[in-house]
Image (cartoon, rainbow, N blue to C red; front, side):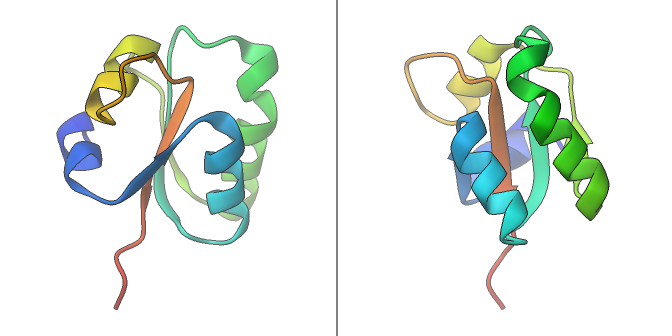
Length: 84
C-alpha cells in the first residue's frame, strides 16, 4: 500500500488510535514512520505481526502527517478496512 492510497481511504493517525484499530480488527494496513522512536512503536509492530496486519515502514513522520492531512508529523497511521 502507498501513502496515496492511505490518503484516499478512511484512516486513523497516532500510535494510540492505530493500536486500537489493529486490536479491533479494523486496520487494513499500518504505516510506521521510519524516523519514529522505536520505544514508541515497538508494541504496535509486535501487535501487527501477531494479528497479521500489513506493516509499511518507509515514510517519515512529516510525510505520514501530510498524507493524513494533519499539520504535524505522525509516528503511525492506519488505513481502515472498507465497510462491506
